[in-house]
Length: 192
Image (cartoon, rainbow, N blue to C red; front, top):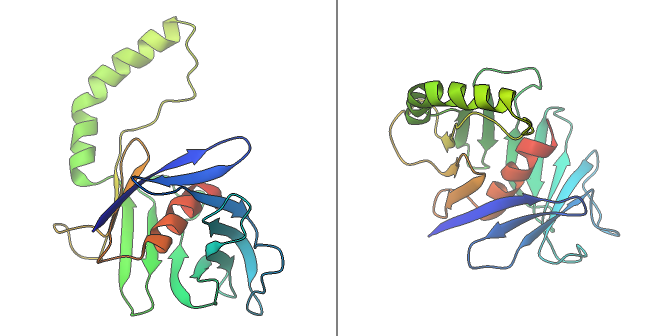
């Protein structure tokens, strides 16, 4: 089963909206009164309700420094997320390390999206010149690159998680737990 969801950052709240299901609410830190394993610092919680009383997963920073651990409310280890350094500009790599040893690597900019970007580049340049000559704000423009999380070494094959240009995520349910996909979608933008 494939799950599709979008990110919706708002000034007051941050949520993920799966297609055909209730939204998943994102809260900074851990829910009040929710104990965490020793040595873990809470980063954010994925909850089924706006108050955060029903957590789906808690994302913590462990002893490994740059890694984020995705835990169930019962402290079961779902995955580890490895984010790229902040200064990495060209095709940053995000990794998902599953408990069974599987590594999913997401490199920003798949080959088809890079080729599309090269074809569209002259039109984008014309658009930017038009923006420079007009009074339209410039802050919403980015490159149309897609990210796909696959097993390393495979150029062709199904991705476990993909992010489209418009911020839509698709998760193959048989390859990745949806809570891990939610955590990766939030961590990619919050933890940089």
